[in-house]
Amino acid sequence: MGKQRPGTAPTLEEVAALAGVGRGTVSRVINDVAGVKDSTRRAVQHAIAELGYVPNLAARSLAGRRADAVALVMTEPNWGKFAEPFFSETIRSVGDALTDTKMQLLLTQVRTDGERRRFVEYARGGRVDGVLLMSVHAEDPLPDMLADAGLPTVMLGRRSGDESITYVDADNAGGARSAVAHLLSSGRSAVATITGPLDMYVAQCRLRGYRQALERAGVDVKSSWVAEGDFTEQSGRGAMVEIIAREPGIDAVFAASDSMAAGALSALRAAGRRVPEDVAVIGFDDFLLAQRTDPKLTTVRQPLEEIGRTMVRLLLEEMEDSAVAWRHVILRTELVLRDSA
Image (cartoon, rainbow, N blue to C red):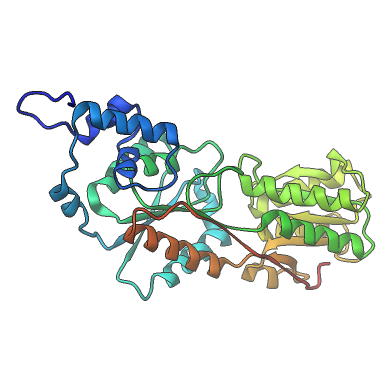
């Protein structure tokens, strides 16, 4: 017989507090959703039994009402980065994927702990039916906060190799390997790289692919060949200047974004280096920018339209069926050859 206060019914919040978990985790256990650890599931079930909690079916029915809105949340703290092609291309691909639905797309930025709490409360209030996340850094707790609140959530990319939230990603390591392998097979021997911010898993993966390609070719990776950027053109220019100063003999560079590759082209031109005759350059993304640089940019194409469609499809499925297990989708990349390499 469960413990229950006279005249009052135990609440979901009380179950969560007793089990030491979030209310979203309790909801997932009640609805038998996959992805909850056995020990956590047992703790919640024990709390339910001890309190005598009975799910309020009427409230759950009311909770099923739809807002017909999806939030696309950008967690990048630097406003300047929203001028980069990645953000506009992602918004376009997600918007296109929602065209044939009745869903409204809401854009918002979440940067601080206070903004995270306010957004979760906003979303839990029934104002959105699901959340798409982009530009999430390694230690960002927002995906877990949304999961604990029981909100369907899909990420573009992931925070680490053992991500538990549903995500859609490109094969970042494989794309980088193919880029660097192409440079080596074309006779380049001193291949530098400009990475993205290394507190983001996407940047770590592209750096790993770069290293793997060199190691497989028997080329020692020199730390002086590596400079960190932040995916912006300005950072690519600065990183290229830094690499040239340290290693004037480099004959190729793999930049982890088209924007940084464009910055590298500018720095190489200023240093009197011809592309591709003196230094070959490869980027990553294949935005329109890659066809507007001089010379046109060889790059790794990540399928942003397919990424957007897949993110929306997975989110709609989770919104329809809360028992759907978390899913991880990695899409292929393609090396697109142009003039810079």
